[in-house]
Structure formats: structure tokens, C-alpha cells
Image (cartoon, rainbow over all chains, first blue to last red; front, side, top):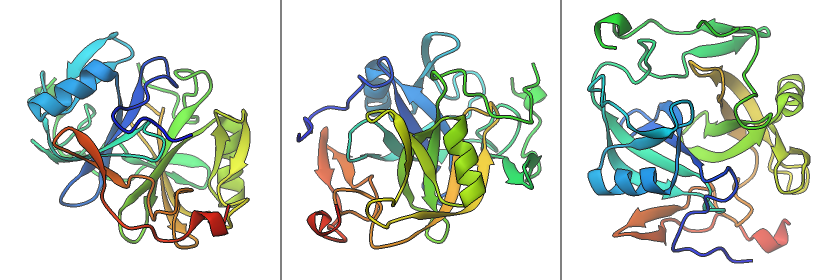
Length: 127
Length: 127
């Protein structure tokens, strides 16, 4: 069945799709968030990545507290239209609320998650 | 609250977490799948990315039909331990079952999804 190419498929995760955030310059994967249709539309309209917070149950523009916005350079979707990939310019020293450049700062080593890089900023000074 | 660093958090999506697959050499994001705990353990044990298929409701080693396996080079997780990032060597000409090198072959241009690259292989010859 050919999907409807005009729109994303939000049906598989109760109205949400994963959004992978990748640094447009370095190629690093910075974070994964979730978007509902409204968050996706806001992202396109404003050019700033906006997510749906599953814990707070509301829209959330990344950087609204920290100033660490994600400026969208390119948006892609996959074969099933149920995931988006955003290439962004990340404003500020780091994307992660724990102070790291990327949220993916833990690597699996011999069966354990090991912090694999230094903090880029002090999260207490920002959040 | 400090998460339990010994294990991933599969509680947020009914036992699943998103798994972002990135080419270890080029940095391209190739696909996003979902893993349950068993799929994640299989991935670690075998070194080949294994997902949980939401449509078929069973484990699925990527490449079991096509031969296009994903050999795991590195596994990271994020601050919330609810997503994994796998850097892989992708065997074969393309990851996508539609014949493209990456599943993210559609780009948003002026509000429409536009195919932004050529097919890498003929999917009819493989699937």
C-alpha cells in the first residue's frame, strides 16, 4: 500500500512520532524527541524544533528555558512516514539538560553504560 | 531522580524504545526501529541489529531476508535511558526496503515530501 505522501503517519504511537535531531555540521546525533502533528507544524512554521513532552503532556520548544534552541536546517522523513530526521544548528554549548553536547553521552562498554565524554556546560547555571 | 544506570527504561512506550541507526563511517542516519528488551539483548549478543516489529509483533533481525545486516560498532544511550543510538556498518547497497541507501530519502521542500536521492538497488530483486 502506497502511503499518503502528503502527510506523516501519527497513528502508530498514539499521535506521536520520533524526531531524531542531528547536528547539521558534525553529523552527531544530539537527541531524540517526540512530536505530535501540532509540534511538527510549529517546528516547520517557526524553524525551531518543538516537541511534545510525554511527561508534561504539552508542547515544548527546545530552548524555551535554556536558550539552547535547535534551528532547523533540513527535515527528512522515512519510507513509512512515521519518523522525522531534523538536521539542526544547535544554539549554545550543549543540547542535553545534564550539561553534555549530546544526550547520547553514555556508551555501552562490557555490558555497562559508561559516560563517554566531558560535560560541555554546568546545567545548574542554565536550568 | 537518578535513573538506574544498569538498564534501559522500556516503560514509556509499552516495552519499546526507539533505536536510531547511524552509519559509523559516513554519519548518515539510516533508519529508526524499535527494540524491546529481548531485541536489545539479541543485538548486543549477536552484534547484528535486531528490532521488534510493531506490525508483525515479533523480533526481526534486520537483513534476515535481504542479507542487508547492520553490524554494530558502538551503542550509546541518552540521558533518560529510553533511546539507543547504534553506529553500524551496513552490509549491502542500502538499508531501506524501498531500495534506498537510507530510509530517510524524502526531504521537506515547500511543504511537500520530495524524494531527494536515487535508488541504490532494485528492491524487487532482494525482497
